[in-house]
Length: 346
Image (cartoon, rainbow, N blue to C red):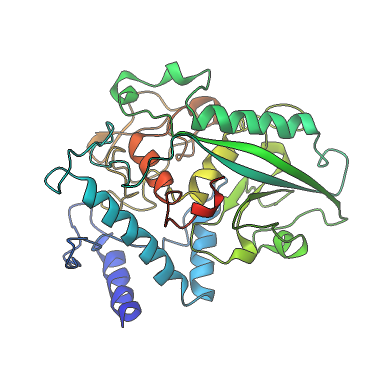
């Protein structure tokens, strides 16, 4: 029944998205006060992939194939919102939103800094694609710098957003590298690389496949709630790390940072729709489209200044430098005890 009801909501949300001034009029609030009326998963299949991230189109395809996926992702979101609601002032606590504009750290988050172990699968048809250990290590360094806000360009965050720029207290360790020679020159986005070289203990390790995807795709990821047989991230070798076989302007390792954000439950910062579509993060401004290249600041859409330097936009690697406190809350929300990716925390 819930699936039918939420499908009706999804259709209604798609109709509503035709106008910037309309908002969803369906109020789905349970006994605990959790409002899910704005929740949606499907996005426009015609969305351009000029930014190179295929994650949302991949999610659409997975939703079409897996009739239970919507329910699983709905429950993950609801559980996160329940925790967030319990942290707000007036619910028996002081709020503690950590500057997140209404996105407090989820209750039970006493983890401190957490480390996610990573397996890297290098799938190559030539010597260039068989990237070096140094290139892999450079990507691990970028992930740790970006997620801990120790990146050298953190001081480039404009003052308008510097107050919500966050150290996510998430870091990563390389648990192992697997190398696979294969004559296939392009792997596409249908998870063939994952079925050929299955993820290793995906419940406890984040798996990354580095292979030529083709079609101008830089990378794609799977959100929490997806099939464990395809869980993980795929990134092209030219866009992985900062040294070796890398191609500007995506030679700063930020493609992987972006895809790990999706893997840990972050949406694109513009919400993959018009102004009334949201990324479910209160401290990221609404927008109606991705930004590309290195846009001038301020760039204004939906009557607010875009956070173009956020890792979940489509700007060039050199022009990304932050996650927000609200995004930190969402990512850690799947890592806390009972979260969809809690078993990753070692």
